[in-house]
Length: 488
Image 1 (cartoon, rainbow, N blue to C red):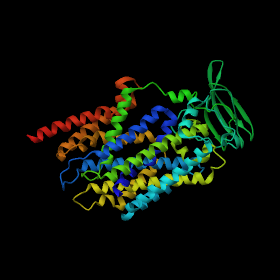
Image 2: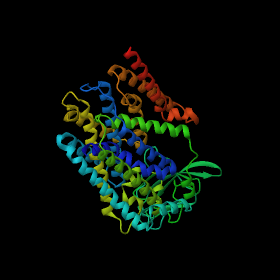
Image 3: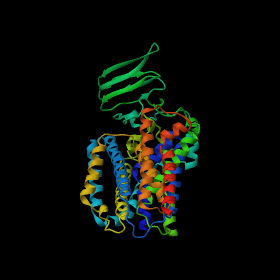
């Protein structure tokens, strides 16, 4: 059962399971499709039985790629820790240091693997309680909640929202779109401050600045954009449309027109990334029925939790859409404006669940790397200095926030392009390394090209958005050709 827990902990890290409700909130059916892809990819990876030579050492290339992947995943999780700290009014570095220190201490302890099941159970219970409370307050089941959200008119600020009652500090996450108003809206500075907006004046866009005294307001019209704001708190009007929210629940439920090339690219990226990441250090013999059932059950619980979290949040706290969906806000209960039966204890429960999940995933990732050295003592998984350096670098990088989901896709695409094909069967180390290098070069080349080109539609756009769509087939062909050559 420990193997099942470690398998789940590697996949169900905060940077991934928090994205499930965030993507569903932001993309509707498209986000649900991504959640299904993540679930099915993990299940397929569980059923794969790689043919590996007994006693053969892992190649340095594979270990290095996985170590870099683990470092980037830790970076993504620590970014979330910093973002949560900011939303709670705590300096960013304190949230990052607290999470990184806890993760490193458990990683340095050789017996920490025994704690992974306990941590995962704590995460499950801590995250389920607030969701049950939110569903209780809504008074409807998940299907009725979805129907209500899908049929509602524009998403508006509820009267009990903290954005309306007391105001909150407006934190616009790095790289997210500016706040654009869909109708006239009065913005109030309870404690005063400075506001800069781009307003429409006679068909021209003009940047204007206001210095507001405590309690003063500025009325922004439809099409105006909030660019910068320097004030402790900002208040919005109850009953007004939430800037950044979908036009209506109907539009949200309908989603965008399916883009099949990109959907296939996403599926391939997630699938081969899961094969490379989840099969690292896993035993080659078939999994027991109990392990398969435990993993499948855990994945389904995560998927259902993500769907319910998204739907009930959109129903009860539509102000979550303000400025675009940020996954860390799903852990900051008070940011949603929900009050009454849910309050500070529920927020603490969510934070405890997120931290427990991060610690469990850190333990599992360390165990994966340690298990790669099958003929040695697995010291890479217990090297205190190495892991101190990994956590330190990830923590320093997390001080500069970036979007987490692109980082996760980057990791899955890179490891899938370089290691995914070799996971499906045995091959000489030299052949697997050569194929991995070819796949990684193709992936990196398309990624760099995407940074220089404007987004495109069709197959070309899918190749640039998901370079693994080309890198995985190229790596697989290289591996196949190398096997044929080595067999002669």
